[in-house]
Length: 492
Image (cartoon, rainbow, N blue to C red; front, side, top):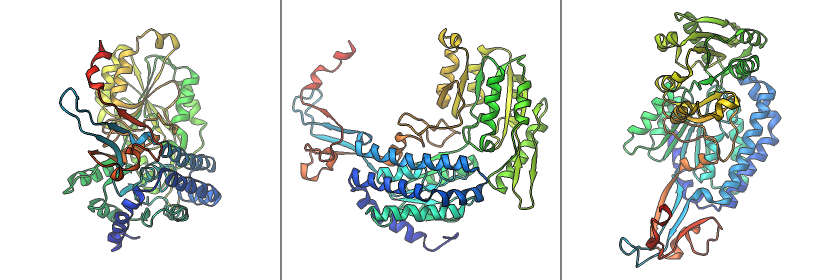
């Protein structure tokens, strides 16, 4: 579908028509459909990976791991919806002796919001693209999905969409449950369509904020879950060779084109940073995803290198071939705290590519306030400290500051590599995201659900999860009559 395609209305209509039939599918049927998609993607793996390598320049090993993650994420979500806990079913039985007045029978659960529009990302052609996390979450929630393909991998997007559509159809899901569109103007037009009830996005701060503003300014605003930019600061109380080698590996993985790449590493003043130079020089050049990202990284690198007070640890190299593709090796610079504060406009912006800044600090006690001032919203923040420093409570204020401004706080390790688990949080305060939810893990499903309560409803008209016979066998939190008389007893 090309820009300004007249079929946008048809796409929206098909999604709207599928909304109620899809919402009424049983958990087992919908879960089986997700498993069928996972199986189909894995079966087509060699074909899909070959296309992805050609279009993105990412390595075969990286893409194999990403496709595996994508397939198993779908299977995890399938089990999650069959379990049913995500529906948050609450049943308050009628109670004439309720302490604040007679209570009617009230039953609440989460229900699908309706058609979702997902803007695919460039840097994860499987895990955050056509069949990635946002798509899996919307389908698991029971919402028809329209994916706006990323222009960086159009052939892969089309082929993946064919596979997903076929698997869902063969699994008996309604027509219109999954559709693909292309072109920025088509994406904007559909985001404005009243039949779209929620949006998701992974990409740049500029584009994500523009789309979020469109969603908010509709006559009837809709939720928009945008993952934007993040510099993911890391704070270390020491800087030995092993830590610095791990830092360079994290910065240079996938050419630094990861939303969780550590953009800043804080180390004690006087640390020996020589191993950064050695580690970075050993990293082979890597192609950036597309010419646009290459141009953006080249300019960003020039701005950082030109900033006053910057010392180069690893200058790296950037070259552009005849096809306009950019290849880069890691660039790492170092500054002291005063230089960072003085040049914050030049240095604090995210560098999407293999570039990072090492900051030398004189006093660890000042780090909490410094973090709060410079990094108000990030996907991750990380602490590297010795066991005794973690145990004695001296880092409690720093950890508290990180928790207030980050979606995920790590102790040891590096933020690149986001595991898909029920407890994962991949989000954070603005500007990391437009809405502080998670786009990874099973909690991501709840973004595309809304609460509905039924009061005094006959059993025959209640959704299955709210009925006393509970045909879907989902967890029900029931409040029996008479319990209100004991309120407050647990707090005494």
